[in-house]
Length: 424
Image (cartoon, rainbow, N blue to C red; front, side, top):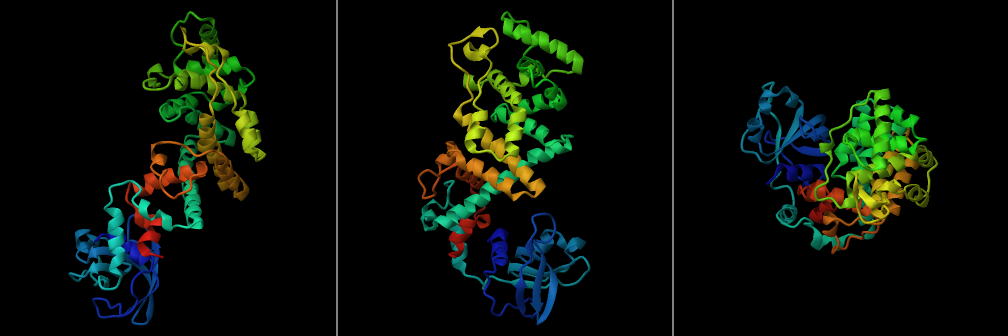
């Protein structure tokens, strides 16, 4: 038996309500189970319970055995003095709170359908990632879509932590938030942190002053990234170096160490040198991008704005001074979709939240819904299930479901898991 399962029974009102008698011989009627507490303190706040016909309001604590109260040292913690009911699977002893009063305890081992626990164990003991794979066919389309939409919204909410961190570091305007989110995205996971460091190393107002000069934006980015510390033979990097030396003196800039950038095991098209040049091209369109987002653009218009290539020098280079086979270094479809999903949707969602603008929130979701489904190791685990994977909202939701629920065996917190366990 687990506390999580007992809390799930209590929260979902799955106890047989007849003859609920406490260890003090008093009859219990559950009016409201209270609100689940995910922080320290009692498990449920603000429950309402009739005890021998008298309505009481307070907190509820859940344990497998009543003696766990003392094992967890609640008898010494005044935070638990307002517990009005101690709900346990087995009452093996009477317990007291910090004030010395007996805590009313309800034993529930004979007051629920034990098949629920069997179903819970069946899911929890499976070794595969998608533990409910054999039961997913029981879901109708509405049950599928409803939970996936909620999961995608939760995933967007979790990404707002990036914005909160930026705010703590003094980022003020919406466009500056967009600048930093775009920078991190251009690291595409492997170089996400170096790109964030790069953006932080160049004040946003400096970027704004040079948006009309592609060469100066590139000089700022490559210089601050540490790639212009060496002497080169090619005219292009030497020109960037001269520009950067002037700009770094003007703005008192200190570059990053070149060693922070990762090249190992990356496809050359994903080398940070290529991504920095592409990012520079995107920054040249930064005002257009922010203006377009303000006007609730179509997916096609957004995609068109990111249809850019690295500077012509990179057509036959991956690093400075080393020729390679000619190929235009265009920002590919997968990269554009990644930016729409992980930056633009997040940015619009954040704006909608702070402005109380549901239209922007909906637009954030609709933009992602226009992107095709992603293909990665986690999503491939769902390919042979009845879940319909039609767009990036689905794949982002399934990614969140897998990492935050399935991998952690939190079936009791999952809408689908609750459906399969409860049989409702």
